[in-house]
Structure formats: structure tokens, C-alpha cells
Image (tube, rainbow, N blue to C red; front, side, top):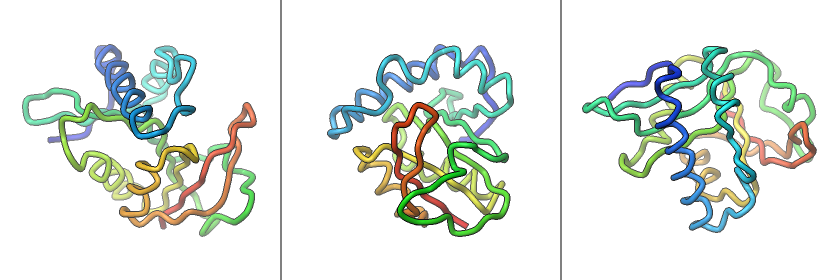
Length: 161
């Protein structure tokens, strides 16, 4: 198993992974995250062009997970309500982590992989995404407060350093 940068050839499979993850979220009570076609093919292609899209491939080279990871400031993290970040040092960001349900523990593997590359990581998720919040807690992330997306939607913010 390995993690590698995604290519445009991976987009169709990544979109399938997002569809599966969206369905899984609905089945666990998360009805409001990733609606209205989010994440879009265009956004995914932008992530790939920027070098921020990654895929987790199994031993048969099947894509079993995808995520966005970058090590630069995320403007949505400039303001945090009801708490504070653990530090103000440069950080990495993980967005849009999705798997296909085939491999157990892939969320932890992906988050650990990111942390190995940047030991100061920020992540956010929807308040209804209890599964992701639980995973973040098990991986050592601390709930820090609420951030707001560009459209004003709130997200629960986590940090590990």
C-alpha cells in the first residue's frame, strides 16, 4: 500500500470514492456535508493541478482513498470561535478525506502519513460528521473551536501538533 500524488487519470475513481463517502455519511446521520455536488470534478482537478491531491492505493494498485493535503496557510482558519489553535506555527491542512469502504483503518493511515510530513496539522469537519470527529480524536487531534467556510458555513476545527 502506498500514498502518491493523484493524476488526472485518477479523477473518475476519486469521484466514485466521494460518492461512496457521501452515501456513508448519510447512513451515519450526516445529511448536510458534501451536498450539491461537492466536491466537484473541477475542484478535484484544481487540487491535482496544484499538487495537493493524493490517493491511497492498495497492493493491487486500486485507489481506495483520496484526500487533499497542503502545507500553507488556509484563510478559513484565520478566525476561530469558541477556542483557539494549539499554536501559530506553519501548518499542514487535510481536506476531503474519502474512502471506498474496502480497507479498514485507511483514515488513520492517511492522517498519519500527513502528520509524518508536517507535524502540525489542522483539519475541519461538519458538526454532523461524528465518524470523522471520532477518528480525529483517536489520532490525537484536539477540538479547538469553530471555523467558518467562505460561504459562512460553520465547521468544527481540530489541530494536532
